[in-house]
Figure 1 (cartoon, rainbow, N blue to C red):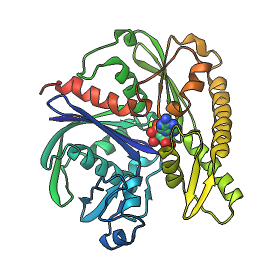
Figure 2: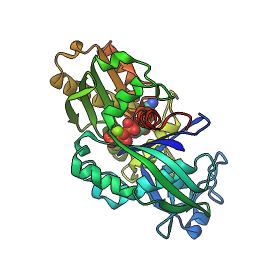
Figure 3: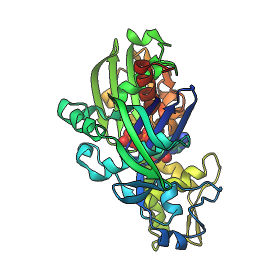
Length: 352
Ligand SMILES: Nc1ncnc2c1ncn2[C@@H]1O[C@H](COP(=O)(O)OP(=O)(O)OP(=O)(O)O)[C@@H](O)[C@H]1O
Ligand SMILES: [Mg+2]
């Protein structure tokens, strides 16, 4: 049986899969999907037959009698329109969020090329505020019946034989606690006073654990979304005719990771945005650190601070300067999905 960790965040969906042979695959993309339409695809700019610029094929998933592509890149490649799945508190009741989750599960189960009937053990992450009896039973219903669909025309039935829900901050803690085989690698977590900082696209969650028991959680609505939003406003000020969308801006910025100069491409227009991005990052950091300081004026009392989330990664150096005891998790954006996957492995066994 495959073990899958699935973290469908407001901004990014992260997937970690461990197969019976021990190989691990991971994947992440913007939490969006689009309807697949063959005719539209033909007219999509610069593409042919659902092929990315780098030659990778877009996967088409069938679900409930419709065809979809998942993740911003594939949506763009086939000329579809990205559907937003944003919704923090009431996500369990959002149709789009449920569709996104099912598509991501189909993708996760078939990532290695498998089709047909696929049995999985699934670890699914929910925000701490959703970790309540009545919501958890709603989520569990999504996976009770097998998920039937298709990938690129081949039938797929995903059977979730084991289903585990964890709150996201606990998944981060579990990631530090277990190794890839689901064995304890760091027993000090059992006694430490740990602060988990999960800095995501829209929310900054700070969760305190003592002896692996959740003590307290606070959330602040701030993250990379605020950075992108500021950049968009500034681009539109500079070029009043340009309307930039956040998925596209994020995609373009991330494709230029590590480059000293950044641009935003809009049709034939090429707008330099290096200064806009740097200013937005600085402003958001100042705002963010102010909020954390207000919540945790005594931050030095934690002997362990785990940093997770994509925004955590983006601001990792600043976090480290400000809080020297901070430990950036390996690939912070994947920490939750990895923890979820490790957790199910610890239950079903690594070699089953
Ligand atoms: N190294 C990096 N540099 C800059 N931005 C990054 C980096 N890594 C990830 N990001 C950005 O982090 C954001 C996603 O973070 P994350 O996946 O933690 O959010 P999320 O879980 O979807 O959101 P939330 O927790 O608010 O629901 C994206 O905007 C992504 O582009
Ligand atoms: Mg998150």
